[in-house]
Length: 117
Image 1 (cartoon, one colour):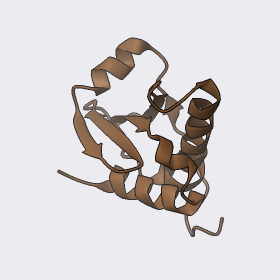
Image 2 (cartoon, one colour):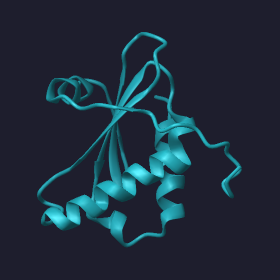
Image 3 (cartoon, one colour):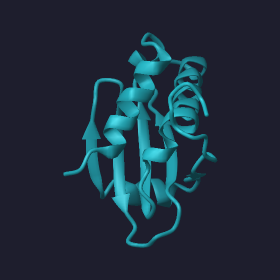
Image 4 (tube, one colour):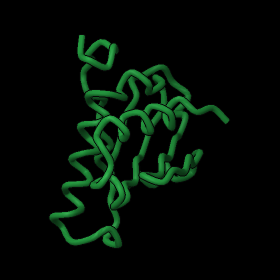
């Protein structure tokens, strides 16, 4: 068991096609200072899926990839257990992700994923 106190789980399945990302945009939006989380309830009990995106406003390709890598690792290590089965998630990263401690990213991500509206 890692230091977070949560058992390690496999990383959730990934969204890969543009149509899947566009479908999630119709769902709920949970805004935060580090990222935006879009959630779509698919209406089934299959495993949760996640997609990551970082816009060009954040910076050049190197900066965008660093943001994306930090998000992927935070989901894999700290927040995969907070994702509800039957939901698709798209996480839109912001540049502030590069300046905050990794534990803060995980805590904020877990809080946004568990939020109910």
